[in-house]
Structures are given as structure tokens and as C-alpha cells.
Length: 378
Image 1: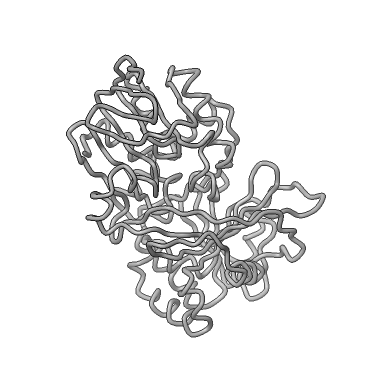
Image 2: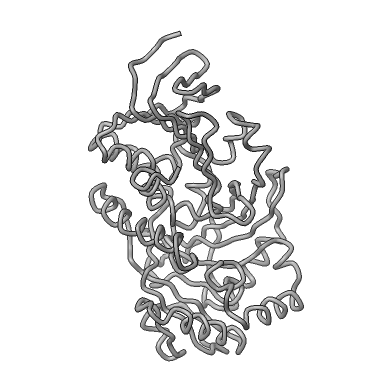
């Protein structure tokens, strides 16, 4: 077994959480090494919309982390040549109770200058494919932006390696961590600090921590589609009434309970499968569509056609994308911690587990990493 020289920081996992830790450490002139069991990251970090979604985070710590992440993403995408667009978001309301929730939300965020309630006639200024029939109004937010997760997660290691000399070992599974020592099948490394950011796989390295937390797993189903011979960008990312029940930022709105009750009455499968529908679009004009949320310990790899049909049917209720061609279907699994936004644990003095950002990794990771290294969050 070979022994390497000592590193300042070792990171297990090259998804967005691990890359954020590596970037933040490298900016502090630390010698950083990153391990990824796959030839390239293939987990939840490449199986999402690529949305940075501050509007979904409630006031306080997570909203601040989201906005800090947004600023870092802008800097990195410019330096690394990664596609990014500051396209904002539209929450569309087709029912009076949904419009009431949006009004309550804006009232509760009176100091937030990034928000604006708009009329149906104004929607075209922000998005070209919104279905106008029955539209009551919409909430415009200018803080949301997009990257293509597949491109970003692939290019970030190249950028970190070139600019900050971060050392990457892809196709290297860390099988055991003992304090500052990390082991693969045939090698050993030493680091002053070890960060385990391996998503739903961290239970393999620290099964006791995994077992003793309230962490669970969430499976989502998503699709990618395109309009044949059409590459035009639609504008703002879109969502509608179902999304209001999903994000914690809307939880304080008094009328939300009416929206939830109505959707449960209309189709209880929305609740059963945790469906709310978002639509984003990458630089090639391809649409990302989803998603669902099924929670539990045992996640089967099989997608449910019923879920995809529910997602597409709801998508057609607020867009004019009837001729969209679905080109890909997939699922992803990420860890979720009940009642909390993330998990930070120190099973050993040298080891920090950073995990369970609950589907908000693209939105929160860079801001969270900055806090870990500058505010002693651990």
C-alpha cells in the first residue's frame, strides 16, 4: 500500500457539495485532494434542473446562503467558461387562492425588492410560452438563475485543477476513513481535515451516523425534452400552484392551506408522489421537466409511468408546450433530513460530514461551504 504526502483538506465526493468544499478550501490556499468513486460525478448533482432558486428558501440563514451561492456561481461560471443565465422565475397563478398566496408572500417580503406581482398581460415580457387561458397573475422574482448541471459539474473539476491545483482522483472509491487517514482498496492518503460529501452513499463510510440521524432518502423523477427545430430560450423558469406547497418560503402564507386542500381534493396523487412541476431550459434549448418526491429507505430503480404522465399533464396546464418531444427520462436519489436543511456531523475530530441538502445542493452548497470555513459552522 502506497502512502502519499499530507494534504490540508481531503474531500470524498465530487458532486456539488464536495466541489463547493474544495473550491472554498482552495481559495484559502489549502492543498486539496478530491476523491470520486465514479469516472465522473453521476449522482443527484447532474440529475437536476440546474436552477439556483433563492426564492424557495425562507428568510434567514438559508436565504442568505442561497444569495451567497448565487454570487459565487456568477464568479465561477465567468472564470470557468460555464454557461449561465440570470433568467429569474415566474410563479403562475390560475386560481384565486394561488393568487392570494402570492399576494401574501409579497406582503411578508415587503423589504425584498427582487419581487413583483405582474398581470397576465405583462407575462410575455418575462416568458414566451406561458398559457394565458385562465391566468390570474404571476409573481416575478429576479434572483433565480440557471446553469446546465451536466456541464457545470464536469467543468468545475477542470477549473479547480487548473486554477487552484486541486488534485482529483476519479474512479477511486474511499472504502474507509480513520481520522486523518483515508483508504481505498490499494492506497492510503493523509489529510489534516476530511470532508465526507458523498450524498446518499455516506452511509457506507459512517453507517452509525446514518442510522442515528433522522435522515431518509428521496427519489425524484425527471425528464428532458425539446421542441424540434427550435432552440429559442423561453425566458424565466416556470412553476405554478403546486410549487407553493413544496417550498418552505411560502409556508407562512395563511391561504396556503386552502391551496393544499384543493389540490388534495382534485388529485391525491400529487401528494402521494410529492409532485410539483418546474420547467427550466439549458443553453442548447433543451427543457428539464420535473419532478416527484418519494421518501423512504428502499428506493427501487424503476420509474413510474404514472408519475411522468402526471408531471406532463400539469406542465401542459400552464405552458404552450403541447408539441414537446421527450428525449430522456431518469431518476435521482438524494438524502433528506427531516425538519432540517442539511446535515453537518463530526464523527471524528478530523472528519466532517456535509450532507442532506435535500435537493437544494445547487442553490445552497457554495454559501454553506463559505460558512463552514469562515464562520466555524462545524
